Length: 111
Image (tube, rainbow, N blue to C red; front, side):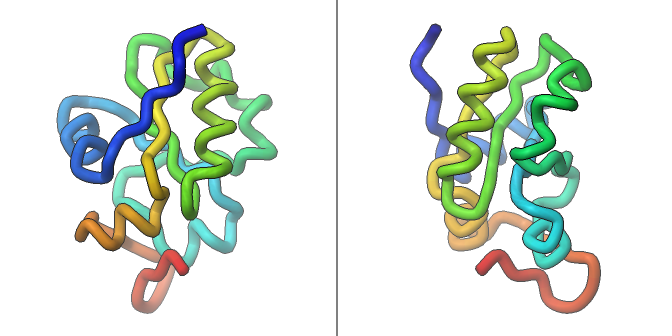
């Protein structure tokens, strides 16, 4: 298996513009508080039930709060034949780099 690819928030935004999918693997409450617009949400614990939902021709950039869960998600997806990368530093790095955020209500946060 290839080594997992780490991408910066800036590289992730470029990949998204080029058609990659941003997969947020945080828990429901974290997702509701703040997320990147257009991201798909599948909590890490639920990922095995959704592995067949992904387009095998599309790059998947996995993200969580700081990078630990998304690291595991990217490895899991790669083990199942998908092309995946991990957003280095997670949503904390995304927000710090000025990445767009939205929430279910109020000011979006990722802390």
